[in-house]
Length: 251
Image (cartoon, rainbow, N blue to C red; front, side, top):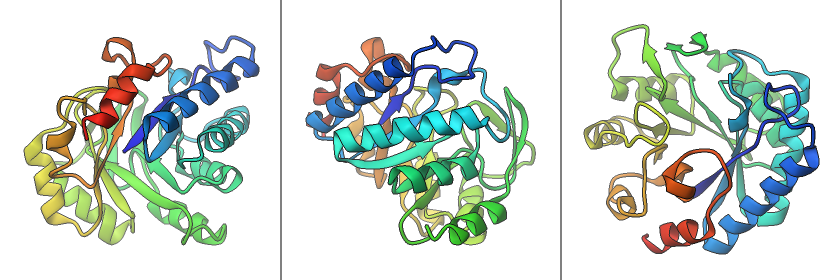
């Protein structure tokens, strides 16, 4: 079970408040809450940086995320993941190398998607060669979304076929299945189709709640949860301690 830390706006983003101290305090608090509740890992992402950059993020974003990621790992003691929105896998790998993360999440890994940032194309070849060049192939897993939320496919491809492409040709270590939007549950049929098609762990990436956790764990290898840990089940903002504890207890 991976709890998501939705970082406040970082330096350079439109809503940054001007205080990295406050950003780090928020990251530390959420990391400690997740650890105390009994989560297995944390996923740090620049959720507050909307509108998101389509390609490579700015240097100040990478620097701030690296500091926040290491802060979260040190204060939680949990396995750490990094997601650089909207789809900067190369920066995520660099942050993982600097912060001690053990996995990165990549939203678009094979093919191309139409998103609110425009058309996002991926380059799995560049990413996986960079991982090899940095010596991270045995320490940092690449986990990728398939039919990622907030997007539509450019080509008519089934989600299970995309998962097979991601694992067999992109060499992803695992795949993530989500609903259509943040906080929206995935289709059970889609999860089962992906699980049957590809030889890799399949994680749930959105829409899992304390009420549905036990059911999803019968079909998925793991879950990534963000929205349900927050007040009113809304993404963004600090993690609610009681909701985090209730989620773990539902396992």
